[in-house]
Image (cartoon, rainbow, N blue to C red):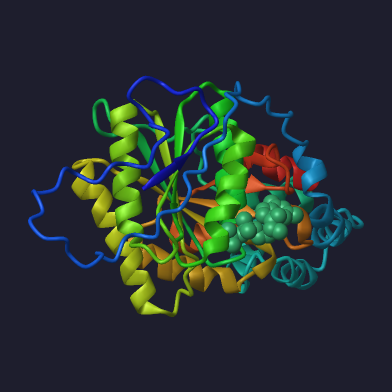
Length: 351
Ligand code: GDP
């Protein structure tokens, strides 16, 4: 196991040397070289740094500019029509084109029509869209569920959706709030993933626990939890290898990581955040369902909402698995992660 660190060393914690092997029995005869773990150079950042300041989060309406100019512009045009009211078929079609999903689009239109809202069709559709999103605590934070233990966040999703970027953003956010964080590089499948996580860790000024590429992801998470407990860290965020939701063996491995957490921190209920790329649209729903079955998701981070004109996926994803969207990603900077507030979201869409 080795760590990368940005923080000043605390006595006894996060030693700069790689962990010594446990004292071995006296060796009578020299044995053939045991196949050693590839011993990477411990890569420790020398200079202690304070938590970097996080830039202010972008305005949601700016992050949603494409969606607002995309299907929402068409929707607002239809709903703001003359006194005879909109063509409800066109409204339904536009909602479907915006990734709200056929079933939900039909429901929204039916209910909006029945409202006979004196304030007009736009007000009716807006209210029905808002009603699809369950109210939630916007100030949500991952919390320790075991007394004295760290909070644990497992980040899962298909490769390329933005998992590592999201972990970096979360680390920066919570670090700026003064929490002590440790990242677990449990995507051991790709060597580049470990490096990429390290880059984000450096930016946020947080340490990483990593093993060699190809190592058992469960062992990485176990070691990270050990280190977090020893160090009194507040939060462990674990990266995981991107899974094709159709590959059952990979999904099993993820379930195993989940069990490792239960074993090391009995009673802990880790947050399992599913990262969904908003640009994948309705395809993402099948991914979400498969991950939910395998590991039990507790939250969703919808990334790249700035890159799609079809932000209606927000409504579809919550409806399909009944798990709240916790954050939306609206850019590539550390600050481009916005806690999801349904009211503010709908207001920004109709602004
Ligand atoms: P991973 O394979 O799931 O870990 O995905 P990465 O974190 O490497 O992200 C894949 C790509 O998506 C990178 O180029 C990121 O910069 C980009 N990305 C991630 N989140 C966002 C976002 O919210 N907005 C935009 N525009 N790009 C994002």
